[in-house]
Length: 309
Image (cartoon, rainbow, N blue to C red; front, side, top):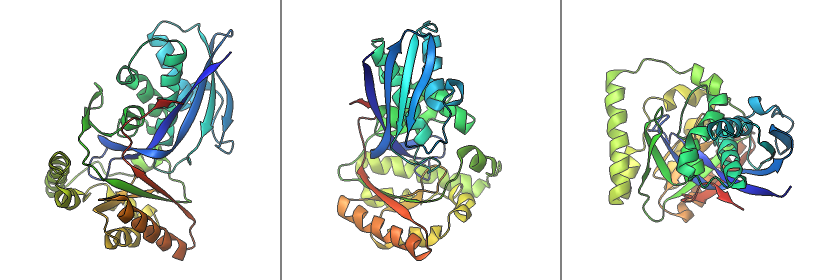
């Protein structure tokens, strides 16, 4: 049967200072999911491309499949047959929200093919259920922007209390992804559960300053505030040359630079596309000097999130 194809974009989780609560959607790359009705009850994954054989076809073990299953349970349509095709257009374990994009695209595609009329915001809990499979908990910093677009902040992950932040015109991202792989669950397990009071205070001040900077279009304040003093120091050692990459981005005019999600991707937030291009090239050169291949993604902030295509 004919299906519906949905694209959901990559995202920059945390944006450094907003660990587990803030993220931004990119224009590209992203994942595509095709959902169609089937006469066979349940969710079946019939095709996966772009994953190098690393993703399971078992729906209960796949982020897209879990998102679709939990959604069907919610609407009382467990016996409805759904077939999913997953087309990965972004690398796995990159820190760019690959699993979140698949989950977001899947639940939106299934909702549309069944014509439920539900909004994307109403679908967020089911996309989050898929993402939970790889993260081990409910974190909305990737899945919320991937589904809804923009820069999103979650006041409370458990109740899906998420809000879109104002984005000043011109802000651009340069994301450089070295050809390394860091797994979300493993990297989370390495984080310290204790935070010095001084770091807690500084991080809160930086997050507040960043949000104020966004709403006031205060570009210098945005730059001063983009300084992660808690998570970045713990994860930097897992990315070869991280601080040299960061220095290269800042020297090129980036407002700030930190680790995208779990990593190894590194993002630079820039005041315009020209600075982003120069920062991306400079960041990639650092990895090249270390004999590490890397890809550059340049993007404005995607305000649409998941879309039918």
